[in-house]
Amino acid sequence: MSTSATDSFLQLAKEHSKRVKETHFAAINNRTKTGLNPSIESRKAIGIELEMEALSATAFPSLQNIRRKVRGSFSKTTWNAVPDHSLRGNSMEYVLDGVCLREEVPELVAGLFRCLTGNGTVLSNSNRCSTHVHLNVGSWKLHELTSFYVFWAIFEEALIRWNGLERMNNHFCLSIKSSPTTLALWEKFIRNGQFSGQRGGAKYSAFNFLPLFETGSVEIRCGKAPDNQEEIITWVILLDVMKEFVKDNYPDPRDFAPLVSEQGFVYLLQQMLDSGRDYFNPEYIFEKIVGNLTLDQFEKECLEGFRRVQHLCFTLPWEFWINEAAGPVVPNPFQVEVSNPDVEFDRVMQRLRRFGV
Picture 1 (cartoon, rainbow, N blue to C red):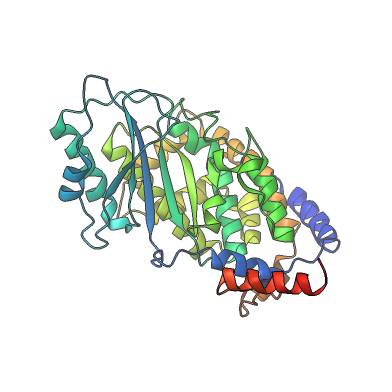
Picture 2: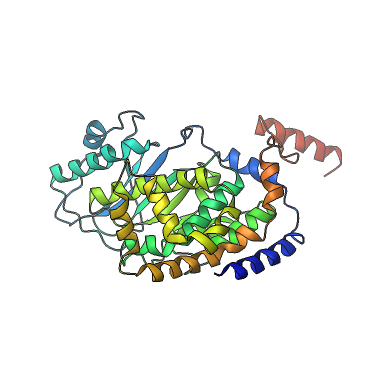
């Protein structure tokens, strides 16, 4: 997008923002905060779900054996095995029983794979299998969450493609390009504080906001089937690095404007990857994400991704909302706290009888 085109768009955005219905930002901020699970306090807290299918002739290791041998050195988190009805045949979903730190991801994932190998389990993952990653954002403000979503949208097509053909247009991890449902729901949430949830198809988006209101996390659902432990470890850590990079460098959605007209999205990706140099090789990951595209083609694809969400950056009164978010959380005046539901029910019934109901 040229500078003149960007200036023109920003002018339209300013005019539009004057007509935007005022949002009760404090109430929205309170809603996101109350969704924070008390056990998720660390800024780098991560949850992992691994969906697996194996050859029918091989068995999965006993959960007792896994939990005895694999445990986070700091968090003491280990694995649970849960049924997943989206999988077929000889299958299992392994889910961390708590959150872990970024530094614990290698030992937890590698430890699980050692148990599989030692048990003789032969994986035969289909396109139904994937890796889901939960990232703690429970204490984030609305503008920070929106920035993270915008950043994701810019690179979403490339990130899904990097995870394999099985993830592209997969009905369990749809991109914004394939289904704008989550984008529409998030904009609605920004404006009036309501998020309609699974009925609107939000759960099966590659970027899933629904856990935000239960565990204080967002879920990235487009990770590849867990065939290779090193690929899984890299993917999980990359997402956590991405999340922290956005919070530290682009907390305001309006901050993305110069990238469109000046630095470009290749620069943005390189900047983010370089912030994770302690955990992976940025140059190698960059080549994997860009894939077979030329840099010009990659820039164009990222620009198209940004255009899908640019209204979140430029057509909302962030200058007002961000100041509001810096203030104290305002309790919902309409929320009734019920300490004893049975006693409260009796009181209501007594009042109804008093009026002859």
